[in-house]
Length: 276
Image 1 (cartoon, rainbow, N blue to C red):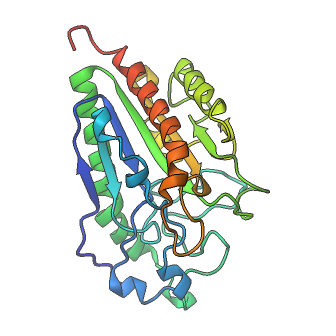
Image 2: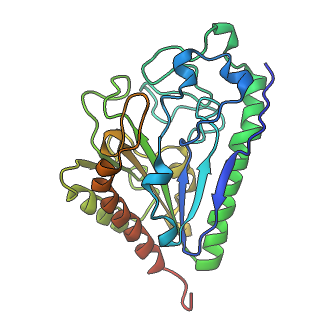
């Protein structure tokens, strides 16, 4: 199968502070030729990290740069390694170009429509590579300008997905690649905010330790501190179709999100080069 898209691979807003917010799973666009190959449920793109731009509407006030995916993760998953290697060996995961839904149902109507290597390569070149080039370029710019940079990788997921975890997921799932992607002092501050954010539950490096973006770009020794947050969708939206944003519900968690983002920003700003 050939792959073609008319949409840009991302939307980017450049900020003024040493903070970049990445949203790799918010995209919903499916090229029509690909959408026609998917099941009716797949065409609803249910495994999207819905409404994160609205949830993080305070990003501009923090002066953050924001990088937002446009295409659905069903086209290609921007938080997976380019070779498709599993981030959690031995556990059930979805791939670089998913073939099934989070509920373990097939994504494609016909098994013959599953993308072959050539199509995966085309998707990677059209979507994955430009997104990561922009991400790397912006982090380099921030570090060159400020001497340090903070990266917040924003995600959300249904609170109950038996395929990936038992029972109900913790609400605020902070991931720092088991401590490798950011300063331990920063991680301690963030988890302190999260654990005090009643009524929400919180954990550091639990089921979600950070995906490819956190692991690839977080490098405290080089001045880049990366953190992933996987947030339960029931904290701000309807978890089932039509996946509506719930402003009154979201208002409960937003102050805690902003406090964590401000803490990350304060941390990196405290480590800026003199005179910055």
